[in-house]
Image (cartoon, rainbow, N blue to C red; front, top):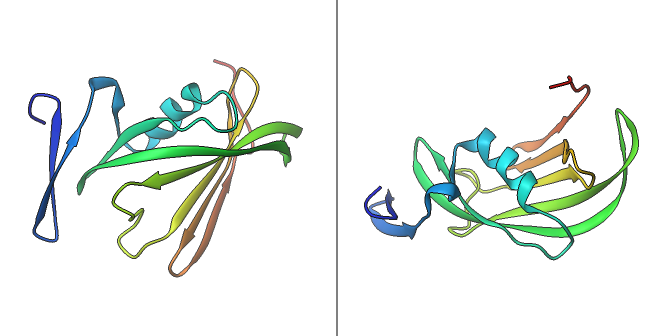
Length: 130
């Protein structure tokens, strides 16, 4: 980090990403911060995801709102597609889709990772009172 910028080197190419302090997140914090920023279909929050390989600017497109089956019954949820600005979610490509509850709790009901070797689906099975 240097004065509101993150410098990233990938495959010998240096790139600079402009960031604000509230935009930078590790993978888990990214998902939890993102759920507070979406309100309707068409929203597109912009955050920076930081991993051991550096930072990646991501625009999360809220592409759909519909009732989905969850462990808690049918619930309204937003389908969110994070788009990595460098085009690479994982080293060999892939994509991610998140289903986040449309109610005030904004629970992450489902995460789908489409990878070069297959598909990984994570579903929220239970929640605990805070």
